[in-house]
Image 1 (cartoon, helix red, strand yellow):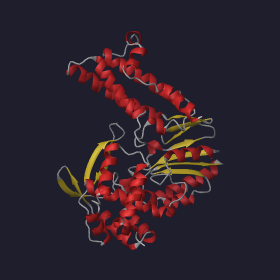
Image 2 (spheres, one colour):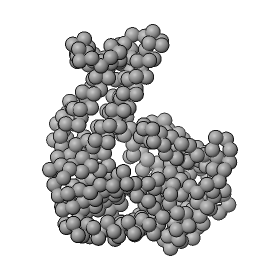
Image 3 (cartoon, helix red, strand yellow):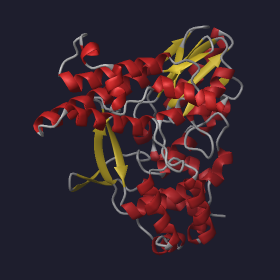
Image 4 (tube, rainbow, N blue to C red):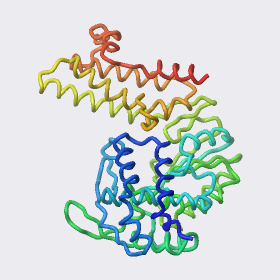
Length: 395
């Protein structure tokens, strides 16, 4: 039976609302979703989808910076109302969860990257290999994906997905063009589709320590020979689905060597922030400090005001939680980390940038000119201190 039939089921929408309440959803987005569901604003489109009589609008294409770097990535989006419908459909597709292997951790109910990393560290033995796929979501072959879907999902669900996936039209800079766009990164249904596309590979890797989160894959095998066989199988499988690996992120791991996966690093049972996570956060801190310094000078404001603003922005990112709906660093990292080394590094860097806002330079004398007590008075909170407070209350 089609899961799409439940799009007009009030109980199903209320169940979706309860599920989203347990997730980390920004407050404004949560209130908008709540209003949308409680006032049954979904019914007009939902009924047409159930009747197989609805055509989605042309998706909007955007090219954005990837992780704050100069690299670009392409994402797609539908109208606000259609996006809410697609989020509900993604939730309904959880009913197809049995099609996915236990070692696939991306975009699934009640599991995610933290569980993936924990599972990998339990099974780390022998030789390892880490790889990801270049432009994964948007390079998925629609024709090959439809062959998989036709075998696995209900006819109505298949027809719905086929209609969306085969539409090559996109709206870019006000003009309608046509292009191959895979499962359209950024759209809610791309999550389920990207999982299903590699599900047979996931099932084939259940006899070794293996985890996949979207296109990030890590595998460990007891011997070099067994790992080599698994890698050959993976490469052949990727090629059969027209996928290309990213050579810059291909990494071989020898026994006892440190490795990184999904924002964490692991070495001799010590779990820390990955170098990528630190680099990414430092870049955000540096850009914001420069922007606030410029804002302060342009508006002829006091440095106190700019430093307070900097602290407020990153306290929100690191620590803020309201009704369990905000995902922040303390929620993401603190339960997994076993050392404060990476947090201490971020703390030190953040303090340097706060002092830069005050002085306009990065001279070593800034510590004397701008003492730690002054930064605290203006709202600075240490990641290391908060980490140990978290461990204390958890213990």
